[in-house]
Image 1 (cartoon, helix red, strand yellow):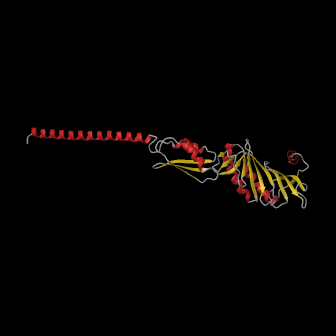
Image 2: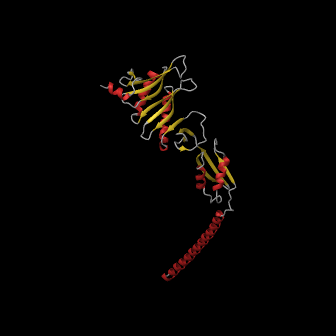
Image 3: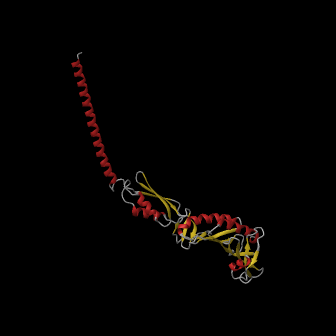
Length: 304
């Protein structure tokens, strides 16, 4: 076969391949156009309010203070659109604005259901006089809540609540080893800590409590010194603490009350104020300040 015939065959084969590719391309374009049209029709159906209607609502959670029907009303108020177009984030935002709601999750369940899972706040401590701190350390407004068991009260700024809660839990566990219970933890704007502490071994209807001042520095050291002193001097004594000021570097000032046997608490208690030095932890020196009106004056007089 000569060169001219070979060239003609190649040209014919190339033409055939070109026609096949053109047909394939045309078929693909037709398919894409059809798919686009179908997609547009489906999108139109999906976005129409009367299609894929949500006709079931499930409210899940363990409710102690909330009513599921109240959550239902909130969801229905802010639910717009159908199964595909409903704004889940908007519903979740408004459910979480409900007073007792800590967290909420909203999701779709094919083909026609909206499920809302709710977690209630779990108050663990009282914050000042009108708020509560939940398990995550967030301050929440729950004016109608009243705890069924004793809780620790926190006094301070709301933005310090989480740190105060952590400290309160640590100190509460620590003080239980000395038969004491922390009832209040206060943090001033200047950063000074103070505690209200209750005797756990007191069988009276109204157990004795005392105030412990710790200041804003060397808190752990002051707590340790107080614990050592309490166990040696006051834990098994009839002398009950009223106030303990541990803010001094060389000692502690305490006010105590001793109840006389057989006499009522109001008329038979003897109150004293002591200055106890840290010089010897095992046998600290104690000075009666009941007749001295200034601890600072006493320390100045005895420091020479």
